[in-house]
Amino acid sequence: MGVPSRTSRLISVRLDEQTDAALQAYCQRTGVTQTEAIKAGIQKLTDPVNSPAALAEQLGLVGCFESGVGDLGQHHAQHLKDKLALQHAQSQQFNV
Image (tube, rainbow, N blue to C red; front, side):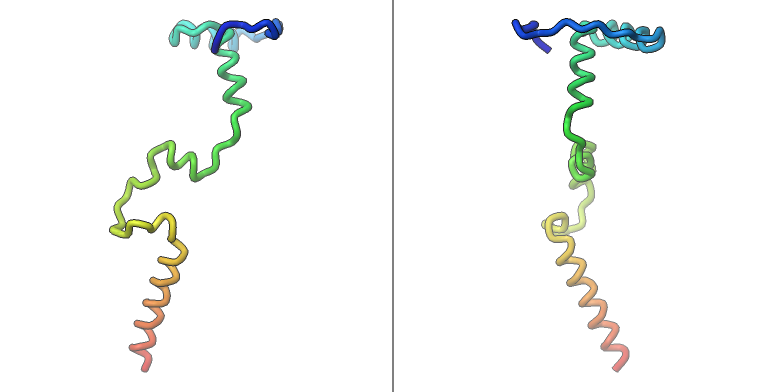
């Protein structure tokens, strides 16, 4: 996370045994200092909440299926309207 700057502030944190053990294990496993781990945790807590769309993209769910329609994701509402209109027109043919 970086070298402390002149404006760094030293704080003291009380941890229960379970949290302290988890922090130590994480630091040992990843090779980061406790300060780096805590700063990363605070950063994660203060990051803006991802939208469902952003989360789906991060998880690789966006574009993972082929529909044959290139702009289906962007213009899904229009494609749905077109499909419903076609179905309606086809059903009207049989009702004549």
